[in-house]
Length: 272
Image (cartoon, rainbow, N blue to C red):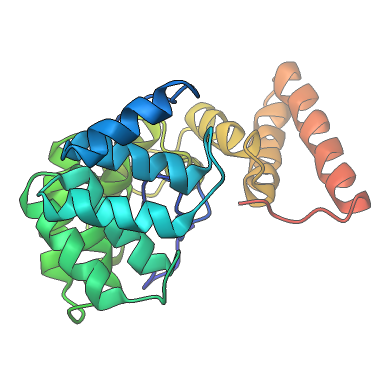
């Protein structure tokens, strides 16, 4: 579950998300080695898209040595040319202090520019800054406004963030049903961080009719991605099904209980 006051901030191009999940990335394919010199020529000729892609190459260390300084340089040039994906990723570097001192105010300015230009990732990230009180003060209503814009564009992290806002009554009236709907939309879009809370809500009948089958499905999705708390809740759900005569549930519960023992024996903790 996501703690109050820390909403999902999805950063692009290799920056680490605050949630520990893989960062959201703007569209762009993996570059082969022979394309880097051509990309460099296009970037030096003023092509903003090439400048952005070259920055990504340096940030990730793909086909070239990783160099945050050069990544910052090319993101800045592309961002100054008004290229929204570069503006978002430049903001991410400022937000995380990658290649420079952390500067949340600069991150807020660049996220704002990218968000106004229509970047769904930036809209989500700007909403997270408002919700967390970073860069421009705490403003839940403004956070919801930007999350909604990103969600309307299909950005899965924003759907999860709206779920959090509705579940906590932040910027909107508290509404458990709406929260569950947004969690489910995010989970069905493949957003891992939404799967566990959705499973808990189905298990406990929060915002939806209790449904052990749905609970087990979503908790298992989260468990398969390393969440020990999801495994613990999953075994309880499966035990309930087993008590009703479901032999397959009994076998699955035994399997996951074994996984818990393995994690404890190996000193592994919650990998979320």
